[in-house]
Image 1: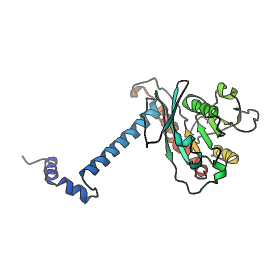
Image 2: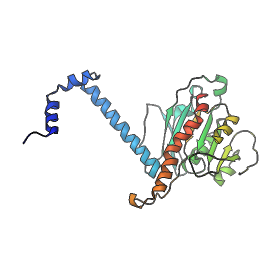
Image 3: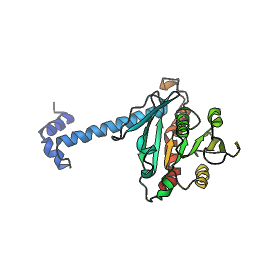
Length: 205
Length: 65
């Protein structure tokens, strides 16, 4: 009986100088290869866990993108972690997205978007414009409320299918418009609120 | 698209976009064979693709930040 194909392949692979092979394809050494491999595997696992979290509401893994200090707080049943540079270093803020992952323990992670234009310092010195989707309940609601309570002159635009009575009643928080959202979503009626400036009457379309 | 237009009338740029919108349908059914595929599809459409759609819609305003 001849050797199976995989046995032949294994024999060839064993005979290969691993270090030489890895350096040939661009790695400095075995350690670097194993380090990169571990990162790739971890990244894949995190992505899978995040997708699962979003789909089924299971706890999401904690994500540490860097050594940044995170601001932590707990409001109602939601635990909120916000990278401190988002809220504190206003002058350095560019475009960023923050994604909330639902679950028993809830976390934020964000991606810095490469931007092409520098916004004038005068515009970003004192406030930021923050858009929150899913602000009607859960973590989105808790975060919206939290940002409002910090009272740092941020302009907050909150979006949801329906804002909760509690949020509607809150100080300086009256929805301005109601409009459609998500072109691919069947839920057509979403409320829109602008929490800064004058307070126009609530209208629902 | 309509939302993006409305928001762009109010602000020239968005500094932070927080994607928190999600739906949670039939979350109490643990077994996949009990789940209705249309419900799974709608959940993915909203929770996974919706996030990307929102980013894509608001990217022009995010880039202005």
